[in-house]
Image 1 (cartoon, rainbow, N blue to C red):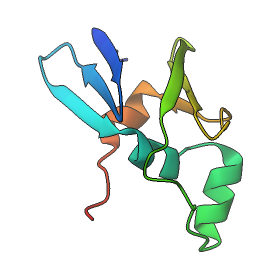
Image 2 (cartoon, rainbow, N blue to C red; image 1 turned 120 degrees about the horizontal axis):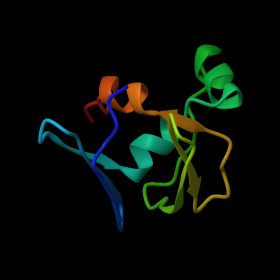
Image 3 (spheres, one colour; image 1 turned 60 degrees about the vertical axis):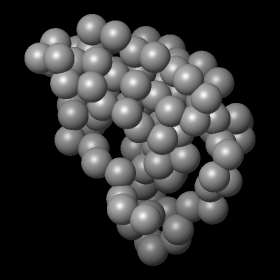
Image 4 (cartoon, helix red, strand yellow; image 1 turned 90 degrees about the vertical axis):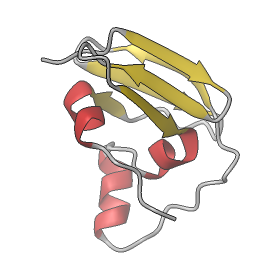
Amino acid sequence: MNIPVEIRNAPGQLTLVWPDGKTQRLAHADLRRACPCAGCRRLRLSGVTLDTPADVEIRSVASMGYGVQLLFSDGHDRGIFPWAWFEAFSAPHA
């Protein structure tokens, strides 16, 4: 399992530094819209677009071993983001 060597949570952006030196910068709003929890996935699969404020922030990052649980400023905290999910994730182009 590939695990980041560094995680930085700054206003509006989560940064992961991977063992190979690759740096991944992810907007908090993109992560909230792509939340992998069952409820958010069900909505996306049914065609519902999550109404996510552009200014949503990550309030905390909790280690879950195989990934992290993110607490967002809108109160959502159900998604656990596995490391493999982050590796495969690319934000949609606006």
